[in-house]
Image (tube, rainbow, N blue to C red; front, side):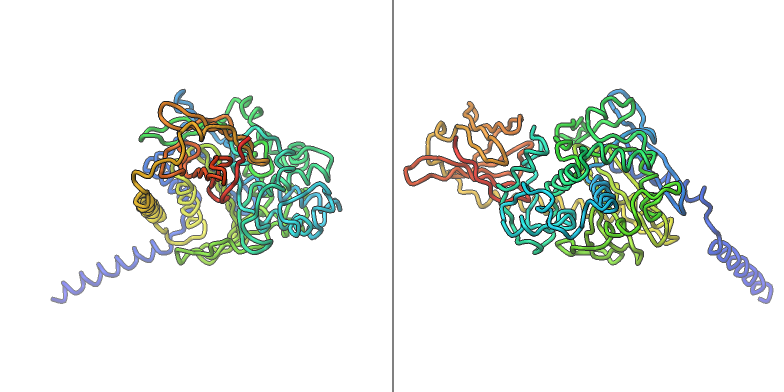
Length: 504
């Protein structure tokens, strides 16, 4: 019996020593990077990601940078850390920094109404026109909803988009609520051009890209297509990954989302953000005005933090501020064509992460999973299974979407015919900011031609129709006037509300 107790005692001591060794084991950088590498590959396979590129900075230097998968699946070309990806709305942080540099030069007062800098600036609401400042247009609190179809897929240039802002109705009063808005960043781009006497592209290139040695980064699609190393964009259609193209017209509102960059160059951008505006000993933007970019101004609405590890979000200028597992975090993501990107900095922990992919089929799920996995590693915290969480969130969202679609279809009045012969609906309709919408009859019903793209309209009931393809989620109502004629279309766009197109 004593011998058995001795053996058990030795086994317990041995197990205790082994557990203590494991608890005290310090993961090396190589261990961490091996874990990250394996996790990225596994998660890419699960989410069917064509290509991703990642960079991590820590303690003032590059910690890790790598690329995975195919930038061009048709040609079987692998992505590299030099492969350019459009980073979309991550661009907003560059525009905010550009205005900060103009503030450093004494050309901009954050609190001065921009109407004083640009007398031709005009919004639908007169109070907002005479009140909004650079700080306001960068923090999404002007009362204007997105109205993205003003520029999306259109051929408009930034000056015409700027001048037509006066025709766009607000959905809230000034300062009432956070409403993400690309058009206000276009205004910021025009403001930069007016104050500097240079195009937004030339100012950003001269004041930011060149000093930061972001040698490969470009600001327009023509520049991108000249590069020998850029990623194609992909979307999922009928369970197949196909090319999504580059037709968004984002270059027109360049300040909102036109930067195309890679892991190598974004390393320097993250380092500057973490080093109070300095890069290689040179002050790119003053610490004071960079802090202005990072100061919370507007609570992100709706204010929700689904998981206990996440804090409520607020928006500064070109950055969202939140908390991750008790640690202050600054972020911004970007979405255009078939690309999704996310940049993250932990200022108090002195590290940053940039992740980009070339498909929109998984939305931001993949970039969030990878960012959080890397963050858990560098914060020396236990791993949270964000992969399983976000897979469930995706499935739940899909279920809710299908449920709403069924409820919507159940509200349809079956057999409710159009009030006019179908020819009456055909015609050319116009809105001063949204442009021309042409409706014409086909042997299948009605077809819409808008922004150089065409799609069938599905009859819902009475004089209501629904869009498809690029106009999916858009509804069309053809009301009859007192004379019995159809003289307008009330088009309801997502995140914009009802827009009236008058028959020409």
